[in-house]
Length: 65
Image: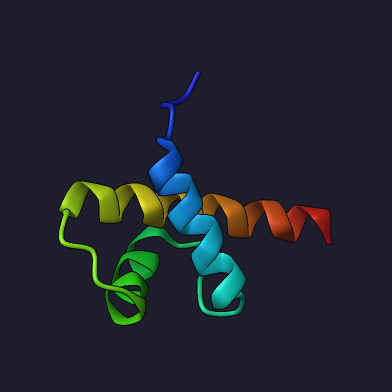
């Protein structure tokens, strides 16, 4: 089993995907830098969790298409 994501991280990632659907990619490190341009997150750990969840969401969307 994987790690459990907090509701804060999931809500933030889903909101960002809704506002910027074409911005994020499958690559985690690219999403980290894109996140810094789109929003201001002071916590490094929270930024990494959101970037990881965003990359997972992008991969899931590609499978559905």
